[in-house]
Structures are given as structure tokens and as C-alpha cells.
Image 1 (cartoon, helix red, strand yellow):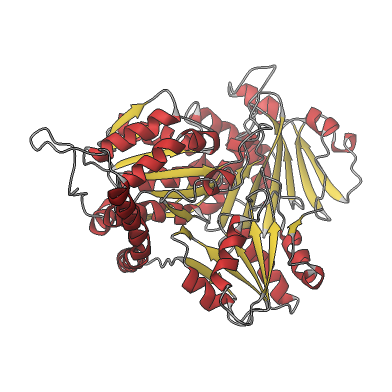
Image 2 (cartoon, rainbow over the protein chains, first blue to last red):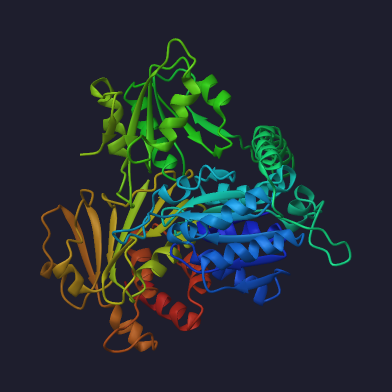
Length: 380
Length: 180
């Protein structure tokens, strides 16, 4: 292990390298480009023994990753925003084909108008497909989560999307402990697919399936999602044993005696941590619940932390127009059967990279008595 | 926590300078963070970059609005951009300029130091007369003025982010440190 300073995007590339994928297919898009630039250098200079497939669009990038995975090898791709949107059709197919592709998405707004800065609209728009989704706070978490993602995906036989915030994480130089290849190999065994395209053993994949068969295959996907909690926990335990860093489906900060709990996902969690520190110094009982896994959504765990709270302020960086923030929907869903629910506030914290300062979050907590629960809340 | 803001124009190397400074502070044993403002990078457009330094991991990810130190890559920029914005009382603004410090007046109570880094950059063949590249040597001046970062760490950090003319940059860095 060595401690170094790297960009969030480089941390992802280092995590991918340690996972020894056989195929990387990608198309550049800001703010993800550093990831595949770094990986293409690694392939070029022999650090990483993989095929790097340059393609003409994101639709082709994800299609190549799907084909590689169907051929039985570990496959990776990375994208962002419009690129993820262009992949949409194939993202569905990968789920149905039960292929453990790992994709890193650098969260970025989608136009119009043109915007390269961060929010979570791109990945939240893909929440219903059957991809597992993890949101990362730091470069260290991004590196570690990429390694974990291959482990989990290959056991669950569903693909995983790992999110890093564009710019505020992808372009930030920060300290990261880089695991050794020996540690990574101990954690992540070689991928051994059960069924794959093989000319010596011809099988048919993706053939027509009528209603009864199709229905049961979709039921299997949901059952695998439900069963994935156990595999994710197993991955986290193994990771802790080997690397000494502890992760969970969610993370909490000063939550035990908190009266106001902020719920957030992604790199702005760090800014909210500092706000919680400030509020505690002012005598306000604030706390934080970070959503790491958004799919599967850890409703039981969330309920166990939030059920007895007074105020829950959900800090969304995307929303389903005409409904609510996607994270708020999940929090309300998780708490539906509680008799004495907290007041849940549906707050749109930032879109398209609108800057968020510690003071913005502090003021929100100080003003919590005046907030309404019946509508979406916006910044001034 | 100490916060530093760089002002430059696209192509002057302010972002690279912020990374070298953060890396050097990391080598000196601090926890640090460096990141740029996120414009669509264009040559000539005003850019800002930030460095934070602390004794524990830095969680906050918002832009630096109350810097302890400001580093300005060219004097002309200080005429058009409010480089003193939000600076802490008695903070320091270091400007690459051949003019005297009293040419620059700011409303905030802060210290202004001008240093002609262009001259040193040109002596070591960094950039052109029209656009000298001063992003490494200006850190030598900063190190001497503030004592925040060691010159040894800056010398070690430079080649990691400056693959071309690293030796010349390090020589310029040392000379700037010695003359400051």
C-alpha cells in the first residue's frame, strides 16, 4: 500500500487496473475523460493487460462491453451525462442478459442548455433498469468501490454503475491509499462465468421469450436485487479484512442523538459533514445519513436510523419533474409504515453544478422550523 | 485550515501550480486538496484554482471564497478580476508583476507583494517573451514569503506535474526562492 495524491478520476482508473479487466471500451466525454485516458495509457505501456476498444459513440462503448461480458470476460466502461443517456437501450439489455458489467459514471447535468457541471440527473434517470447503483464521496471511496463493484456484480450477475461527481470529485487532487495488486487479487478472484459465448460449446443467448418465461426472468432480477444485500455486505466485510477500510450500504455521521438529519448521496456529503460539525458547535443536534447504495435501496437500514427522528432534510441533486426528488421518494417509501414519522423535507440542493457552501446547509438547519413538507423546496 | 486561491488565464498553468503546491504540502506531511474552477477550459479565459491545507482530511468541496493567500499569475489580471475578493484580514496577495506593490490597491485589509517572476522564467527559457510560463517559479516566491511549504518539497513535486523542462523549472524555482 502506498499513500499518494491523485485525481478522483485517476483513483477510478487505479481501481479498474487492480481489478484486471480484459476489455475496456469507451468514448470520451467531460468530465469522465481522464478515467479512460489513464486506462488507455496503462494498456499502452503494458501496466494493464487488456484490450482497449476505441469506439465511435457511447452506444458502441456499452455494446462492446456487453459483447465482451457475454464472451465471458471482465468488462469495464466509463461515461457521463449525454453519454449515459445514449447507452440507455443497451443498459436494459445487459440487465436482462445478466451480465456483470461495471460502469463508472461521472455525474453531470444533461442539456439543454449546455452544462458540463455536476448533478445526479443522468444516473437517476437510469435508476429503474436493474443496475446496482453506488454513489461515492471521496477518491478513496471511488477506488475501493470499483474493486468491490466487480466482486458484487459477478456474484449477483447484475451490472453495477459507480458514480463519482463530475469535477468536484473527478477533478480534485486528494490523498488516496493505493492497494497493492496482491491485496486486490486476494479480494477479487478471476472472473469465472457460468455461461458464455464459446464456439466449442454453442449456446443461444437472448432468444425470444414469451410472457410466462419473460415474467419469471424479470422476477429473478428482482430476487437477485433483494439477495444482493447479503453479497454486498460480504464484499464489505472481505474488503475490511484485507484493506482495513470499512464500508456499508449507507454511512452515518452524528446520527444517534440527531434531531435534524440530512440525507445526501455523492461528493457533496463532505461539505454537509462540515456543516454538521458547525451546527454541533452551535449546539444544534444535526446529523447525516449518506446513501451509498441507491440500488438496491437499503430501506430497512434507512428506517432503522430515521424512524425516530424529528426532521429529515433530503438534499437532492436531481428530481423527477412532476413528482419529487428521487432520494426523497425512497426515504418516504422506507418510512411509510412508521406511525410516528419524521417531517421529511424534499429539498433540491443543486443542479448543473450550482455551488453549495457550508453556510447554505447550516442556514437550512437553522430555518428547519419554517420549512414545509407538502412541496418541493428550492434555494432562493 | 489554510486556503489558497490562484488567479490566472487559461494556458498560464495556474491549475498545474495548484497541484504542485498541494502535492508539496502533502510531502511536507499535511492533508491537502487542489481543484480548479470548472469552466470550459479555454486559452486566455480567466481561471481560478484552489488549495486547502489542514491537519486532518479535508471534507469541504466548495470553492475557496475566504482565502488566506492569493497568487496572481499576471499583474494585468489584477486590473480586471477582483483578486482580493473575500481575502481574510491581513491575508497576502502575491502578484507576478514588475510594478511596485502600491500600484495595486484593494478595499480589503491585506498585504500585497509584487515580484517579477517573468524575468526568472525567461532566463530559464520557460515560455516566450509574450507569454512567460511562471507557474513553477512563483511557488518559490510563495514558499519564501509564507514559510508554509518547503522548497525541497516543491522541488520534489514539480516533475510529477511538469513532464517538460522539469529541470529548468526547478532551477527557476530555486532562483525565485533565493531572490524573494
